[in-house]
Amino acid sequence: MSKRIALITGGTGGIGTATCKELYDRGCTIIAGYFPPEKELAESWQKHNSEQGYDFTLAPVDVTDYDSAKSMVEHVETLHGAIDILVNCAGITRDKTLKRMTPDQWKAVINTNLDSAFNITQPIVAGMLERGFGRIINIASVNGQKGQFGQANYSAAKAGLHGFTMAVAQETASKGVTVNTISPGYVSTAMTMAMPQDVLDNIVDQVPVGRMGTPEEIAFTVAWLADERNGYTTGANIPVNGGMFMSA
Image 1 (tube, rainbow, N blue to C red):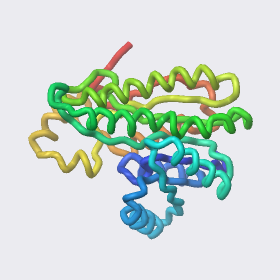
Image 2: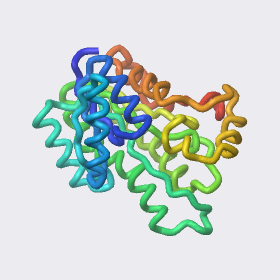
Image 3: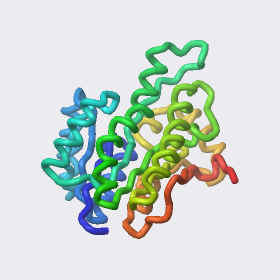
């Protein structure tokens, strides 16, 4: 892969970090998006990775706000050049059963996990079309495919993310821009590993492979979709879930 500019929203998270490293190792310039109130944590993350030999650039952005997203994209492209690879990885959970879910909990997840894809992608896609190259990769979830108790908001957002993928893939396919979804199963990150052991054991019992996935496995799939040689895969939803959910 030649020197491409890659923007990863939620880049400082578990899957985001692995994705930054994988694409960096493949020769990309890495821009990691982070939520502005978490600046101190993001700078600590940047320093830690720098000590490991990774030169990542941070980009503060509120992905739920279109103007913030557009301003960030313009700033990144002015300083570093046109964005060739976009990984929409930012996401949150606010789990509650529907009867107990508040409107704020619904909106927070929809805004962060789904609206953000429009907010970030829309300012970038025109340039990709003009240049005749682009890779847009949206990180969804197995729960967007099968649903999950207590996650009406999250499941809806992640299912909607793939609908977004399929529509935009059709709009961009003839111009060398691919758009795909990855739907991870349960992945070992700091957030999931903080769950009680009995909950983790129950999750693993549902996975035919017999373990949780790793962020590096998701990142490898991102890199495969982002590769310049992979121009014929578009509009797809790639499941990386250990066999937890299978469909024809």
